[in-house]
Length: 354
Image (tube, rainbow, N blue to C red; front, side, top):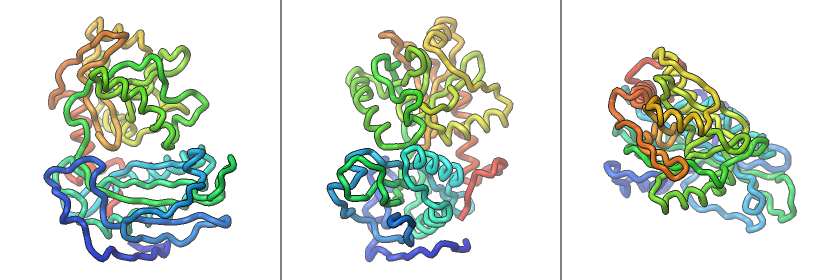
């Protein structure tokens, strides 16, 4: 790849890869040897650098620690069948990252720094990419306000960073969820469509309460009177009702999920019927009563597809049929995994091979 943005590289003196058992990966536990760093100050971006992974030196007055100007992305790189490396849908992730930054009044990292920095970092730590099917190298680009001021203001200094780590897929077994009727994840007109830290921190309380009741996650509601389904935990949510794949439309309270977009596109390509529309709690209850709902699942970068076998609605557990290889969710997931590992032609132009 031709390098357009000069990137300083300082290699780690010793790799930590020998400390990792790739046959028993835990999500979020292991971090690769290097990280990308680029600072914004005095009205411009400095030169990006790749350095050994390590702790930060940060002022306690850094604005991100007080007023929440912090945004991140979640991406994956895969080792393809031919040995090449694929950073999946890098352009779409950059576009969403840029939108999130704009919503939080933060400087947008130039596209060339984002893309070339990621490519150089992944190439440098390519030995960390798992070879087991379903596993991947998780990529975490993020940015935070680094200016040392404790007055309420938009920061004039930022630090953009990326680190990576090998991960397994999440939620391989069907999960139990409950409809959350008291708390909401985001409100219309808010920052729900941005991948900012506050959206996740604010969701912890209701999720923890649900886990105490024996559920894995919650289904967030929104709209007038909180009557409409929005998301499931940290993922978009999809249903199969009357043999139609149905999902809520993205909005300023729902994240524009990359995996969601992939699954809808593949479903259309395979001639499944799809509908992007609002789904009310009343409709969901009626679908269970009439036995017209056959699948429910979350869709996100970490889990890809997270099947749901139980939904608690107003205190009553509603069960879904067992997931099988013929389930629509599993067929879509299988097709997606084959595309991004080079086992099937990428007719959509999603793969970014380095």
